Image (cartoon, rainbow, N blue to C red; front, side, top):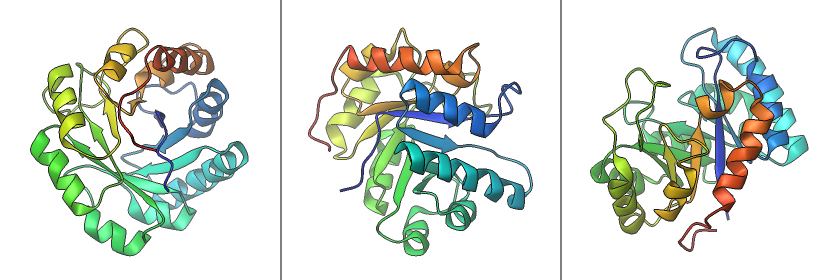
Length: 215
């Protein structure tokens, strides 16, 4: 059974430049994150592979899961645990073909139709949102809101990872809506103390246990 974590921290060096991908991952894991997602939209592929290989070693040592955003080639080269793919990224069925059945594949969805598509194409989990307004993604879809998140949870028999504008204050509401977990960027990466910020998010998640039977 694939282990889909409840707290996904996306590493980012565009919104902030104080910490490297590796430093952010180390701090987030110390704070309790169980999934690290490497997110870098531009740059040399060779450099990305080097960074992700270091992240993989760190995640292996700590028992965390490592997912690469968008870049299937980088995930393969660095032997990451999986990939997360947007609607316009590498097609999920092709990713499954090259990655195999054992790797985790997450898909992004902003509507029930997109979530159904991810399910039909073989995703292991769905990143659903943006639930709240977010400044972390310039091309973010319109806000989905809590009501649509609830509908996605009820309609899709996969772990739903809520994303978009999630923080310590609203994380319990997201979990009460039935989300399996959350994915964050600025709520950790852009904070003064990413480790403490992650720890606070973990506590917020535990304030309300998720509904559902996903394991």
